[in-house]
Image (tube, rainbow, N blue to C red; front, side, top):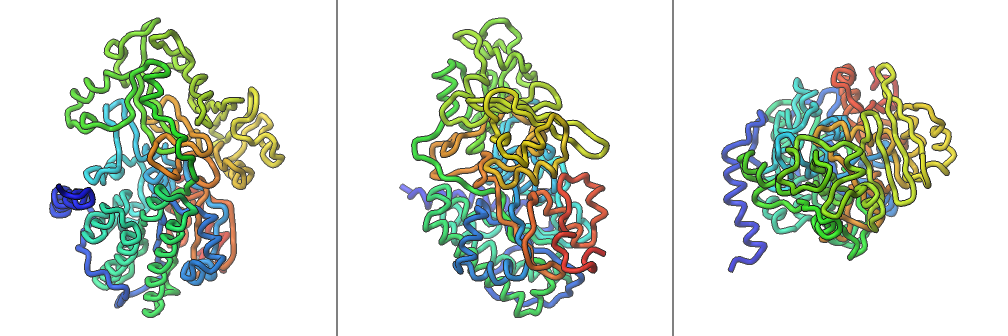
Length: 567
């Protein structure tokens, strides 16, 4: 018998090799990785500005800053914090899960408007359940993405994407599966090796620069190791701290290589994360298939099975027609897709309306089950383990429910901007904003701007919900209900810590920028979606921000060392 680890590695030769040799048709040039020496020799030009972004998957802001301030991350301290700007707090997109957050950061646009609402989602029109976890689904995000990536916005400049699923438009791409050493470590769960290899692939970027004669305008590197360690060990565990120290050593090698080549002061170095993580209690989880089957006698589909990946839409339709509820589970949040039943009483799913027909809000509040009509919102909001249940009763209105109260977010276009109104209309405030004076002032029955809500809520236990949440429901793939787990609860049973909810530990991330023209200090708050417009501005392409109608705004004026960088 092949040991499990060896079996996973064997899969490499029947999945990775065909992908690597056939290409994936995304119009990016491909380069074969070299031997990843820690040293880099650069023989290329550096023009005004270049940006290298290291995204540390799952990194909590408080953990990184505390370790750096305590001397445990000397490279990050020396080459980033002591030379540049810390953005505190920097707020992740909703939902704070990798695929949605990385897409939002790469595009400067909220996930719902990109139609990338998680790591898993259901397209009820195409009858397709998407998941990005399998290697064969590596380019699902690039195909589904509705907005332009920073690589496409800079299509007249050389760019590089390393180990990221949101790579569309990159001049050069090094996918996760191109490096067999890193891929072996990835499949065998040796996460420290994964991050070291991916950082050392900056040697490939040096080769690209020498070949092209100029250093790339933007290089993006995704480091997945820390997140996986945290899921299994917890965000404050010794292994998680060790994983961050491992990243620090590898980043130090790269920064020293730039320094040896006289290029350190020609490149803007960025550290950011996609989300944080929060600890869980071991037995605190809800399994949706089990809950709907046993609690409401409704057939529900959550786990992915072979039939989900059938290429025939007709066969998928026959499979999905067995269910009244389909779940897209993303850790500490789940999107629930509810089948429309046009009858006045319970009927078997095979007799319900086709999946593209959505139920009305009234139907969701009086849903027919074998035991009679049930208020799905009422049942879910009172479950132990559920913090919030969210839905859209009508366009422009988002209803937010907790066990003890409910609130409503309303949106209104005001010229080129959107105004947001939030009120707690029954019981306790589900977002816990009403008792905070700075936020209570905004809960005055009138509409306020997105940045007003960010400034007022960025320091709270659930930051920046009012202005971000409505955009999630703009996606045609949004569920009928969006459920957020309570503190220390998850919607999967395998994790020690997780993310995807609205708590501060999962919604705030580190963001540090250091390089030519950037002052030393701190600013904030800002959003992850602000990074792309800031980079465009920094590279002299601020005029492209309006062209792409980004949700983010440039914070370059707040970090510029002098007026020259703003010209």
